[in-house]
Length: 269
Image 1 (cartoon, helix red, strand yellow):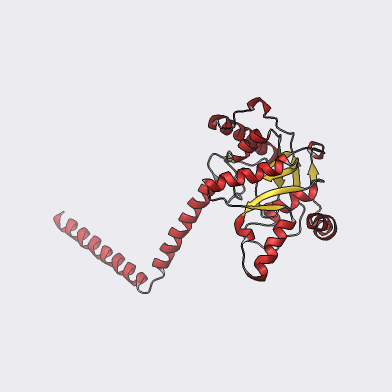
Image 2 (cartoon, rainbow, N blue to C red):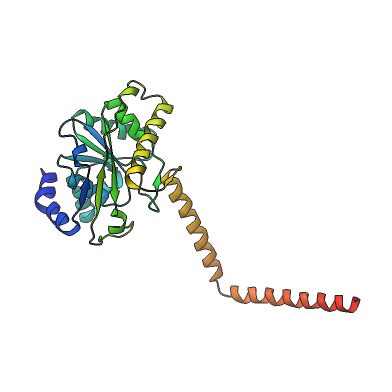
């Protein structure tokens, strides 16, 4: 109930007026039956704008951290995420991944729409990253089509870390449903799962126009984070008292040695 109140009465009308989201491919949205909407992930607001333009209710699997906050703010955040159709899942891997799979399958077996981000996290730089195979396994186990979706310019409206979005137009491009029924019963074959996932990511690349990177977004984030920490340490070292004097002294010592060497060569000549 809260979902529809937010979408139709409270939040939806405001977002439509302010951001005027455009949609391509509305004819690809199924009127009935279960389906997976597999989207690129550029911004926190993707999970708001995509359900906004789809007439049917859509449920997303969201990281559990959004639902475990403490105090009034934590409770309000959890209520908001449940209200916009998100289900908490643990993304730590292993048994948690199996629990997320079961949560997704439960939604699909009710004949509902499930929203997933195959990249697993937001793109750190606007490029499209390698997809995780969970989306393929869900599609094969549930026997449902996968509808590729490209979110357009949401990262410009709300970049990572920005709470209040910039008022600008954003877009949603919905592709032709992908049918993987030819792989029925092969959901435990890792080569099939990778092939299905890569086909989905190729469709997303075509729809979004993003550059594709053949590595996981989480791995790139780790690499960027590590580089940032190294840079911060170097800057901290450079800012220590006496560091500049030490470097100047070394430079002067080097200059004196060079000058002595030159004089020695001249005398020898």
